[in-house]
Image (spheres, rainbow, N blue to C red):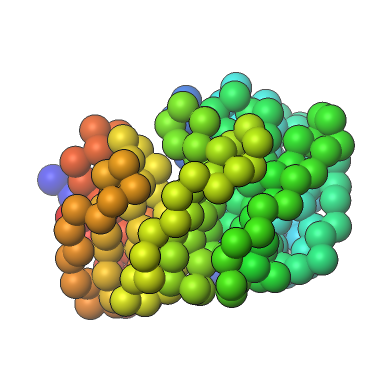
Length: 239
């Protein structure tokens, strides 16, 4: 019925990132004043994770709820203990991190960078792989539900699919009307661009719905039948 059920404060700056953990019992939020992992319940409790000192644009929780990964303007990606906030690994990259995602098995982290590359990071193996193909900034990355395929979207107005294991390109979509700003994954992919939302099925666009504003944060309903987004005008909408 749209009724507000709970509200709480946790940041002193604008929250730019919020992502549920796969279990739905934890939530990670990020702002310029830091990153926090919340254990949800009647009284949500937060663990502060070492922040980036500036905008944090990507954050995720591992499937088992043990690890939190974050990255942003400072060009640093950090893996921390989600239960204690202790920093485990930290790596500096050559460009700003726009978004990141962790696969379902919590083994590999994918990052989209402003230098036009997608990077795969295996934190426990200290191993990296660079994926090249986009001709502009890469705005977002996300894994398929089974973790086998990685999708990326960039300023070159394309969506690309890669093997999450080898990094080999699998498919490249034709140029869209505008640069995709956000990717979602659930029973296929969806892209949020400036002014359009496009659900994709097996890498092919099914339809486009014109929106009235650029979406800041978006997510897909677990059933795969609805999209939800929030915009600069303070609205939350369903499609």
